[in-house]
Image 1 (cartoon, helix red, strand yellow):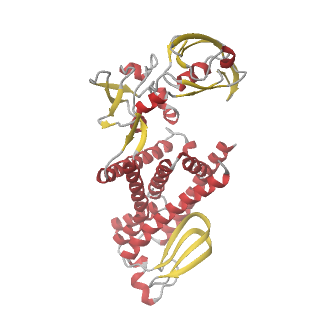
Image 2: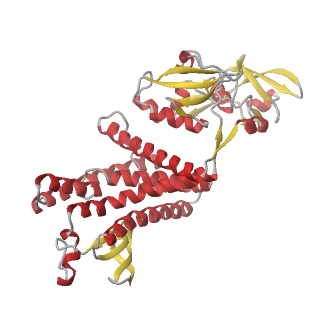
Image 3: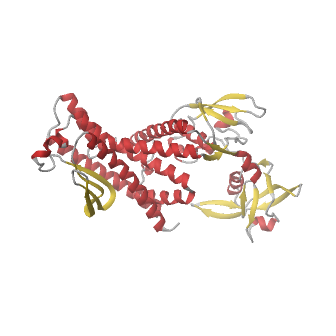
Length: 449
């Protein structure tokens, strides 16, 4: 994907989230009777502006597009006309100020609810959580999960798809185990306890589902293409061959084939295939390549899932409008809690600071989500909206959460915090945000280069 598409996608996401956030502040401030001086998308020098409404509010686009602000009449920030003193922000009750400040993050969270609800009404495609045989000694094998089991719930919460299963397990990270309910071949149900304590904190940042021994059973894969002058072509494998097993180990997905060949650089493997109704065993010596400083084996084939199997696995998660709103609220709440937990784990060193991303990574993901389709892009927009809402509620000076902290302190002590305390807090907040932005940019550049 070209750079321009990524940049435009990112700017669109940023513009939507900033407008919604600031619109939350604006609407509640208007409802509380506060005079709005300027509504700006972006910071710094004003590039374009127009005045509208009875208060002649200035609606502006500014030079730095990484945010925005709503400027209200406020005696702490400049002179206010005598006629507007009663409408100044600083003269409002503490509860009105709390409502105005909290409205921005709340608007982002409500946007996420609406976006998720929309995807649930439209229908989210996925695959049934049908399990392949777990590797010996894996957590899934220890739990007694078996080939053909379909996961229907985790910790009592229904699981409708493989994607649901992954999310439910990620939510359970940090716990000793998760209770998994499965539907077995024949229709009976069973409950299994999946141990999670064997995973290190860093494991949850990688392919943790595979690490637990859980694999999607997508059936024996088909060879889609055979690459010329590679081991598979020299061994006589053909497009349309179905790979049933490698070295007598059944394979139930393209990932299984990749794992077997990657783990056997330069070794001979016995591919058992089905071709035109016959079962053949084809010996193949993998080619050795270097990847990330490690020797790996390749066969030189491109694989695909049998269309008939893919159709049987396919499931669409869809709800009516009322239920979809409820599901949107639930998912927004769960992701918000998970975001806070991840921040806490990073603070105590249980999660890597490399998880913090800046504008370069966000632009890359925005572009990828656009390429993946409208549902993926809407989900990405909702996820970033939640992140923006939650982060702004953190009790850090300069952020909305920092202002809320001042107002709650005012409620407790019976008077506003001093100008000196406010000034010191702003400086601390500025330093913290500068460090955070530098770390995010460093992570972005590390991923890029």
